[in-house]
Length: 397
Image (tube, helix red, strand yellow):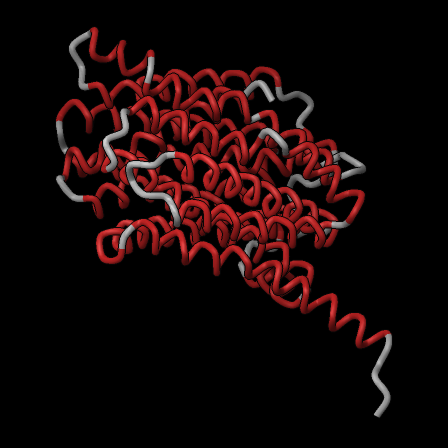
């Protein structure tokens, strides 16, 4: 947990500033969205390599390497802000995305030896709350002021803070994550025995619980990334100050993380499918609230982003718990990495498309698409329940 808090702060502070810095450097809303989406792309690219490294060496070196690469990415973003060179920003955000991939992998570390997967994953996700909420506030507040004080561009502040925080997170993990949970659970070395993707693509694709787990994570990430990426620009267009942007993103992150222990307990008690269905409804309600908010009105955005964050939490925690319960054996870590790859790749595509969508049709229409995508897991669960009942109680001919 000691590594998750500073890493979460470094990641969220950097992400909340990315679209604004990208637009400032390039003069384009679309390129601003591309810069923010670079973090999600980096997370997707790193998911399988980090899973392979952890399966071969353990959770501790894999997570620490991800944090160190996140620190390198934040350094590149600082240089982009100082030099005004946009092309440094995108790979820099991709490096920060590798740090996020390490944070995502850490949730499975919580379940390596835990009897109640939902509770363990929810608790570790909750540990990210403090850092993730403080990240945008510190980045747009003291860090921005500190950068201005020393003669640097204001928007280099969040990334200077990110460099420091990722360094702290890497140190904490290397020093204190002992014993390694994956080593203790006997999972080290197994993934390397079967390195081909098809060895874990096939079971994930053929088991309905696996498809539902990944689908819920994908839907939540698409809605969350697509709408959150463009929210800062939407608020800025309405004349809101950077501090307001920071508070909106922080409230969204509270929804993502603060209630995750309750989400995990609910998944253990009522079943992952029930929580996944509830998460889909929350995603749709949050997107609907955001779709009705004008740029000058932050109230609907506050509510919408909070509900989207909570819906994302339901999909991530319950979907992850469902994966842990469904898959075991040699390919467990690889399947977890593949699930994160699917989730973050789809989120990256959503981030890339969100800038184009806002430029063509506006923020409200982007949020309306979120309503449809968010409801998809709920519809799937309903179909599975109805199909199961029909199989148990067939209708008379």
